[in-house]
Amino acid sequence: MCAAHKHNELEQILDQWVGHRILITKEEKDDIDQTVIDLKAYQHKVYEHSGDGYLPKAVYQLVGDGRTVDGGAPLPYDAFDIPVDDARELLCDPEGVFLRTDRALYTLTPLYH
Image (cartoon, rainbow, N blue to C red):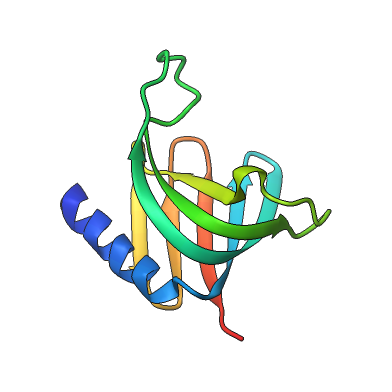
């Protein structure tokens, strides 16, 4: 499957989720972080970075009011960036999105209320 098709598939799922609450789980090494966000919008962004290799160049920015699950801290800037430039695996369906990058595993799950 080509990268453009994967991005189109992800955008179709995110379109369905706008207006709903989603759970974002990020697993990186031995750390698991969970965030809940009321998805208002999303956008594909490409950043110009210094090339340090840590910051992603292309992301899907999920926009909305959100909080971490464990401590309840609000999201800075009311957004959460999902890196897609180094995506090695991307699986999408209406029940969830699974994205593996070189650094982490992201799972997005809708929480319909």
